[in-house]
Structures are given as structure tokens and as C-alpha cells.
Length: 414
Image 1 (cartoon, one colour):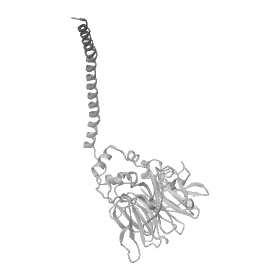
Image 2 (spheres, rainbow, N blue to C red):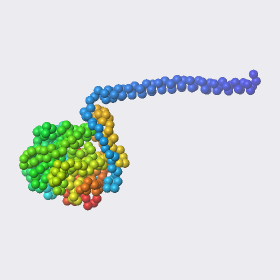
Image 3 (cartoon, rainbow, N blue to C red):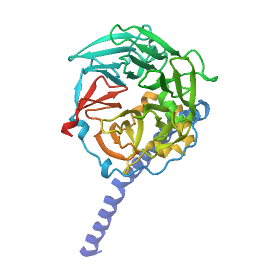
Image 4 (cartoon, one colour):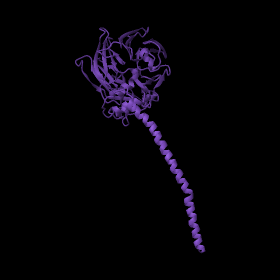
């Protein structure tokens, strides 16, 4: 073997040593680590999926969702163009008022109901408790059944307050002495159905007729998320005659009827049908008495209370919207009741509420139902969970079913 062959031989052996000896152990370690990773991943997936599948199969859903159908939400343009006008509102009595759902005024005095069963009087920038409708303990959602939960509140022309309590019924409250009188107790069924969720009301100028909603005969206020997601049509609009003491059903088969508002001429009553994102109309006097029709459908959000505006139209408050462009979870799930059942097998109402985007919207409708203008607070930065827009002396007072404050918006600045 000559010198050239020897060099070639050494190079071949060196290449073989470098390639074979270091790489063989690395391939074995890599293969072993990959197996461990795959086994761990499969074990973890099984440990998560088995209980999840078991829960889906074995647990009962608290709701029996109905199949619903919606039109495509209206475009957020023109009078509905998104803005930040509600962020110009100021918060009042923050931390002192919990859930001031609705408001009424007698002169310059404002009245509202709170989550702990109180009727509160606000005068000259100060507030104090005027009356309580239920009995203690109060302060938690579990206490609502006996403590009461005032929702809609109205003032009649004879300077009397009327209050709709979700659990206790319809009350008359003296705004000066705080004396409370029960007009319609929830213990007495109407046409064989319970009054399980008394919501809002309006009263005629002469004080004789009170129109009010019972949102459901199955679900109570504390289960409102179940009522929305189930979509059951067991809500009603009722009339109470303060002279004869009779209660009459004017409309039934409603899906979460909410806000109530008499027309200026008192010939019809508007009713917000929250689940269906629309407002129904019931004629209560005149040639059309007894007639029913749609006042406005396919709203951009889910209507809560309705109140008259100084222009002759109506303010409608919405605490959740159907964005277009955008994605509406409610619309998406409306035709998928099986998904709703699974959701409520796995999540509580409170947990589900955390996934609802905070978007406050107040619209002013013409007397024809056409949208005139709108005020927005995307993400609910200032005004959150808006339930009512009450106009008084150039201001719009914004109620909320769960926020710890009132909001006040100067209409001259927007």
C-alpha cells in the first residue's frame, strides 16, 4: 500500500467513525422521548375527554331549547352607526345603588328600585330609602324570592308610584309616606298560570288601568339566562283594572316580554319581546281594540324597557347587541338547540354571562318604529348592562339591571 492509499484509507475510517458512533445513541434517545410524549399526550386527552363525554351524556340539561329563526341583523350604519356617545354620561351614586333597573320622577324627585328590594328616593343630590317591598335577608340572588326585586316603576298623574316586583307582584307606593299596598300578588294564578316573573308596567293617566308583563310562568328573574336560551313562549301582557280588581290577559305566547309603554293617545301598548329582538303592539282602545301587530322587528339588539321620548317617539334600551358586521352568538345558537343543551350541562348562568360582550345601546324610535338616532358604548366602558333610558329635563337617565350606579347623559351635548 502506497502513501496515497494510506491517506485515502484513513479518511474513509475517520468519516465512518464520525457518522456512526455519535449519531446512533442520539436516534435512540429521540425515539424514546417521542414515545413518552405521545403516551403523555394521549393519556391527558383521555383524562379530559372521558369526564367531558360522560357529563354530556349523563347530566340533564336544565333547559329544553326551542328552535328559533331570525332575519339577518340590520347593518350598523346610518342612524345605527356605532359611536361613543354613551361614554359622555356621568355615573351617579356609584357603589350606593345596586341594579337601579327603572326610574320614575315626580317633579324634580327621582325614584328607582334596587337589587336589595328597596324603593329609593333621590332628591337634591341625596338619596334615602322610601320603602321596602319584601322581608330580609336581602343582598344576594338567593334572597330575591322573599326580599323582592323591584323592576319597572312608574309615577301616575295623581302622584302615586306603581312598582312591578319580579317575585312579589304589582304594588302601589305612596311617594311621600312610603306606605305600600299590594295590588296584584304573584301567589294567585291568572288563567291557571303562575306569575313567576313580573317585569315592567305602565299606567293610564287616570290611574285606572295598569298594563304589565309577566316574562315567564316557568322561569323566575334569577334564571333569566335560562329563559333567553330556552326561548320558551310562555310570557304574557296583562291588564289590571284598579276599579274592578280584575286581571285580564291581553297577549300570550310571548318569548320573554319585557318593557311596556303606552302610546301618547293610550290607544295601544308596546311590548318588548326580548328573545325575538322585536317590539309587539297591542291595541287597547279605539277602533282597533283587541288588535295585535308588530311595531318593529329585527332590532340591532335585545330590547329591555321602553320609555317615551320628548319628540313623541320612544327610547329603547339594550344591554346586548346583534352586531352586523360581526357575530351574534344568540342568532348562531338559535337554530342549534342541541348545542344550547350541552352548554348548560357544562356551564352555570353566571359563567355564561361572562362570555356575553358588554355593548350598551340606546335607540330612539320615531312613532312609526323607524330608528331616529342611537347612542352606543362599545365594551360598556361607562354605561354597562343598560336596562332603561328615562328622559327628564334634557337628561337621559340610564338604568341598569346589575351595575352599581345610575348614569346621566346630557342630551344637549350629544
